[in-house]
Structure formats: C-alpha cells, structure tokens
Image (cartoon, rainbow, N blue to C red; front, side, top):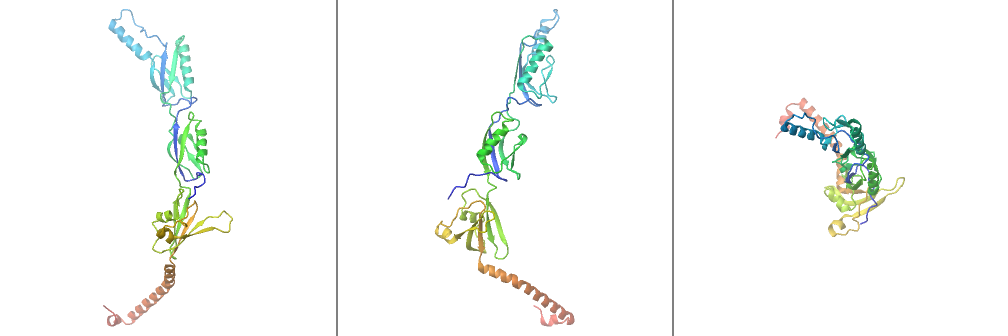
Length: 327
C-alpha cells in the first residue's frame, strides 16, 4: 500500500469548514438590528423641575420619573431607520453606517452641542460581537470550482490543497472577521473516483462509479458492487489510465482465485483515482448469448410463417382444427 499524493480539492468535493474565531472587526459598521450597550455619565441633571409647593409624594414620583428616563445604562436596538432612541430627553441618534467609535463620538458631541454639557462621558459597546454569519458546517465545491461562504461571498478553491484553502479563506474573511482562524478538512471525497465495469456477456456492460478514499483494493472494489455477477468469469484486470496522447495503457492482471481462496495479495492491487476494474463475462455464457441473439430472429420468422400457414389452413378448412388439433 502506498499513500496518495497530497489531496487537491475539486468539484464536487464537500469540505468541512469551522471558524475558531468569528468576531466582527473593529472597523465594521453598525446596521439596523444591532444591539448596542449605551452608558452615559455626567449627563442631564436628575433633579426634577417641579414647583416648590409640591407634596413629598409628588416630588418623589417626579424624581423617579426623571431617573427612569435620564439614566442611560441599557441595551438599545438600532432601529429600521438606522437610529438608536435614548428616550424622550436625549432623543435619537443616527448610528447606522458608523463604527462603534464613530457612534460614540456622535453621541458625545450631541450632548455637548445640544444640551451644553461640559464634560459628559459616553460608552458604546457591542454585547454581541459575532460576525454576520457563522462559518461552520459543510460546504460544497461548485462545478465552477468555487466555495460559497454565504454573505461573505465565494472563493475559488479547485486544485488547491487544504493548507492553501485554509490560508486563502482566512485572508478573504479578514475583510469581515477579526483575525479569523479556520479549520478545513474534506468531508466527502467526491472528485476522486474509480470504476468497476461488469461485462454482461453480450448484453452490455454495467459501470459502477465509486469514490476513491485512498485505501481501496481490488477486493474492496468487488465487495462494493456486491461481488461477481452470475455471468462473470474470474478474468479480471485493472486498467490504469495513460496520460493524454499516449498510445498504450497500463494493464494489471488480477488472479481472483489467489486473492479470495488462498489469501495471496500479490495481485490485490491498490486502486488509484481513475482506475478501471474490468470483470469479463464467462465465455460459455457469452457464446450462448451470442447464439441466442443469432437464432432468435430466425425463430421469430419461422414462428410468423407457421402462424400464417395455420391461419390460412383454418380459413380454407374450418373443421381442420377440430379434426387434427385439440387437447
């Protein structure tokens, strides 16, 4: 047994891609639907603007009202209009399309300009720093050789090794994810195959396409097609494809009896991608089928002639059937 060369991905392989790190980069912008934790210190004064003759209960209610709407320390949703609404006192702030730092500076500047606050302090934090879409699961290599990454676009990976694909995907995702770290592996080896061709003894050939994962032998291949058929002989050989333009091919004869009856693995060759295992039909069955195909048309012609003769005789002599035939 020999190891195959370093695997190169092709359509329609299925890759397993797992993102170890899936955090939004600091330069990513806010968008509708994001949740932002907003905290404001040294903001608007909490003392209620009430008349002096107000009763203690009314004053306490006014204080609680002021504290409820002027204390900003909660998570706010970026609305469909791209703004976060901080309540009736502070109002709304358009933050969509801005980074977290830019949105923080916007709120801080508005507090100074609109409300005349001298030294307000503002903090904006993203509680959920995950990327737009998780990079996890099965990814099919398309017929054009590209790998779909959802909202992050697609990348051409055909003909590349797993290490090359990992490096390429991390470079591509760095535009959307902070320092992405990926794990890439082949989940289904669909592009590397071999074929088992079963001779039908004059009635066509059955071709079975099987995936080549690296350790299959002739015996494994025959086992995957449920063994030799009723018309198969023990004349089996492996044909290894020759390079384009070559006039000869590599043919490896298989001694089936030695492999299955004696356990001799000399001719139990390891199968490589593109190999053809040909199982020839039993020669006697092939001859019998050939004779059957040759004689069958003659039998049909004679049968039609005989049927026509009997039909004419029956028309000429209707009683002939009663006199000469019957059960």
